[in-house]
Amino acid sequence: MQNLYDEIKTLDERCYSEFALSEDILMEHAANGMVLFIKNNFAKNSKVIVVCGSGNNGADGLALARLLHGDYYVEIYYVKKPKSKMALLQEKRVKALNIPRCKELKDCDILVDAIVGTGFIGEFDKYYCEIIEKMNSIKAYKIACDVPSAYKFYADTTLTMGALKKSMFLDSHKEFVGEIKVLDLGISRSVYECATNWKLLDLEDINLPRRDKKDSHKGTYGHLAIACGDKSGASILSALSALRFGVGLVTLIGYKDVIIPHTIMYSHFLPKTTTALACGMGLGNEFSKLEMDKFLDNDYPLIIDADIFHMHREERGSTLGVPIFLNILKRKNLVLTPHAKEFIAVLKQTDLADITVQELQSNRFKYVELFTKKFPNATLLLKGANVIIAKNDKFFINPHGTQVLAKGGSGDVLSGLIGALLAQGYNPLEATKTASLAHTKLALNYTNSNFSLTPDDLIDGICNL
Image (cartoon, rainbow, N blue to C red; front, side, top):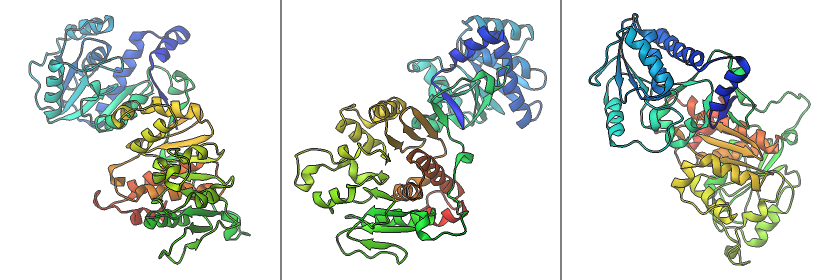
């Protein structure tokens, strides 16, 4: 698990004030880190073009060019004349070595984007856009210095300075960052970094269910009850994934005839041995208000998804226009797993915000924090290319999401994974983190064509986690 930051300027300033490190020293270490990456991956005399802006990101690029010069054929392309104090200093140093300037961007072995870093605010004008477009079209291995410039440059690798930035993990930026590597700045990351409420999950953070107790039975491992509605296939997928993920018993709760797998039970009533609930997957309008109230009239841990976020009590003959999940939000052990469209409905119905999906996607961190502040007992999983998991003042990003999962039913499998862990006694936050990591790991483990994965493939893969 790694720390995530909105900005690292305060961390740099701490280096100056507490550790007697200068801006120049930090920049030299950043450049050395980039050099080490290049030397470990590319042969000597490879052709390198470093594209530099006028500020400190450009200064990082100039320092890199100086350190590579002599072992690699290096050219510098100036987007703008150096302007910042460090950029002017680094320019003086590269001029002393007579490092050639690149007059025209062209194919090369390595192309380094050092135009702007995290301090850039706003949008690129036409001039910058044309340069980035040209850089993206060039045949080369592409490296972003700190961050891809304005998140427009398609990097194969981003070599980021000091610590991980949250901005790298917006869904819309996933196309641009490539593989991310953090470079030390003269001191260990453990010293450079300070405490933060935002963390990046690693696959190693997964905490799979274990069956260590030899004297046990099916009841030892919990009983998950799942609401089975109009689209029963969704709840069946959840049930099958839950059963694979260690829960001892799974019962679908419904009020119509349904053909189900023989490994799953079916009932009109909650079993007395129930230890957790799941609701919303394919629910539709199958449950009356009375039936839904009976299903939810308890304190069992609950995972809700899909239809539940759009349902109102008017559909069950009750108060006009009251979202059914507003009462659910009062529960102590609750997990919500909306996708973006569902989450904007949640935000609107809880009077937190009335926004578009596009606005949410540009400000995912902000609206997640807004929700968890108002509902500190709820655990939120916001689906996306980078999954956000949050409860109260603790926030986690699972960056291992993949387009392989973009298939109907994938979310139902996730709900089953979370429900299985809730039923086995995991607390909601731990259940959600582990289930999310398992879900993405199942997709990463899938070796066939990336368009062919089905929910059944995910369920089958659970046994190999």
